[in-house]
Image 1 (cartoon, rainbow, N blue to C red):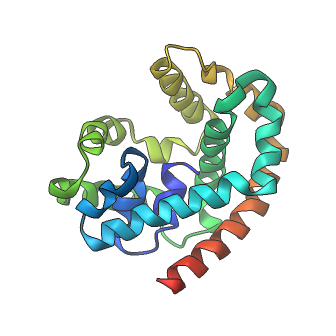
Image 2 (spheres, rainbow, N blue to C red):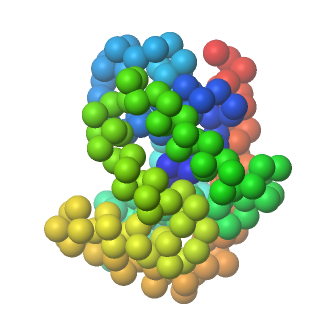
Amino acid sequence: MNFLAHIYLSGDNDLIKIGNFMADGIRGKQFLNYPLEVQKGIVLHRAIDTFTDAHPVFRQSTKKLHSRYHHYAGVIVDIFYDHFLAKNWVNYSDEDLGGYVAAFYQSLSDNTSILSEKTVMLMPYMIKQNWLVSYQTIEGIDKILTQMDSRTKNESKMRFASEELIEFYTEFEEDFTKFFEDLRAHVRQKLIEE
């Protein structure tokens, strides 16, 4: 899952959301350097990633992309799934997506002292271009994938992946819907265990 899903799955605690959001850049036991609630978010992020990578429906989605994008297929599906979460937001939250995202951006701004250096550097671009809301459209996803591709010096070819998103749109959306129900149940259980 990508940024929006990780934030959403964190529940209502802003520090858990922040930890879950910035976890990719935090290696090994470095997470112990953060406040306890942020640590919980980082651990939750790792549990979500482990569950996602092993899930048969997620793997089914990546198979549609593997021949063209190889090991980037999982990253692309993460982005596609965030698209379907954003597009179908009203099915998952009573709060307007724009308001939800604005509150998260504000939370990041209010807590810069505990953010990783990578997150601090990423924030201005993310907020200015409103990445999380842009996930609602194929054009927004295309722009995100193009930016990510440029970071791989265009080796990943991710800039072309919206072609498959359009071609297999219904299948990807069905995969997301099935998978996300399982993931939400898994995360609810994880949060109960803590």
